[in-house]
Length: 233
Length: 233
DNA sequence: AATATAAGGTGTATTTTTTACACTAAGCAA
DNA sequence: TTGCTTAGTGTAAAAAATACACCTTATATT
Image (tube, rainbow over all chains, first blue to last red; front, side):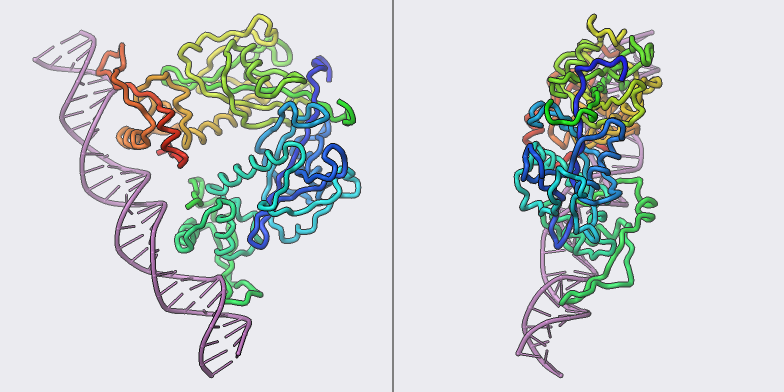
């Protein structure tokens, strides 16, 4: 790096908040740290960005190395750079979030090369421990973000299995928004948006009347909505 | 910085998008660069963050040095780190925006010590030239942001003089949202929110019937709204 | 076979919000 | 006094949101 003043150099990193939804619970992906500082603590999957890689690329790489999840599209939501946030010096971290379906992604583990992570776990949001560094704060901010976003963008479907019931969808909204919704109104509204495809298929393996399955219909969504959605009430 | 790998070091900077509203026009604050790269180009006020300062602090300092504006509260909205964004090497930039009233802030100029900036200008958004680095992109993203935010948060008032008419307020919404609003519906809705204080005072110096002046009433706003606003339609 | 259980699935009336739409009033200038 | 320009106002119709309760269906149990 020529012509640029040296004393401005800093380290920077990415941290990933990955949301999943399973058995009616919202979960996020954590690693247990294997290195100081905060050895033994839970933390968001994250690490330093290489000098020659794009931030998004780094986020994907680091998520893969620390949890085995590959090719997850994440959205940047905030950059944290408070002076004291890293005990060893100035580290600025760019935070990303993603919502993924747990089906097929339940087994998570760091690559053997990821010396900084001992293991990876899906942690229910309601049982969240205090996290390393300022990661608790980062998590809270990401949660605010998705809470807001789920109200007007169809991101809930990313958390559900490809085929889902309206009740599952409603439960997800209820968990994220932290409020009870009226079943009839919810269904009426959701179906009126005309972004779901009703399948000729029913739920299986339940010990009561099986519900119809639906898919999110991306084509319909794109066609119907350059306008705004509101999934909140 | 001990124990941390050296090859991760990068430079990082802040860039500021400062919005103003004057004579019915939305403007943003630019500097003309006085140094290579992009010498002679317009750019967003921005510079490198020092190793020992918080990012927000840096944003305030740099805005002050490059334009003379002091104590402006800015909100972070995105971090740009594409590999090729700075011709001299890897620079990650944290972008901030603010909306300020132009009254009393029309005269802007870099401090003599700010060698990188030749002059500062309020540029109408509609006349925006191509900017240095990826600043055009940063600007576009900030504009999306405020367009969205003005629809549900009372940030418009920050752009207006302390005392303003409803027509001025409406014009501002029309400029930002880029659509015509109905006068009666706009007023009805705005007054119904009950966040304005009607003053015993009228516009002065106009060559037609003078309009009533209003103030944004922050106390009322806080009292009335933990619910959501919608200023859009 | 009958019954119990548990969730699935549905409709309507009321209220609230949004929209569309056009004229009179006031103040200044000529 | 007249003309010009913007301020200021109301209502009806449509759309969206809300509140609310019962019957249906599949499975499990006896």
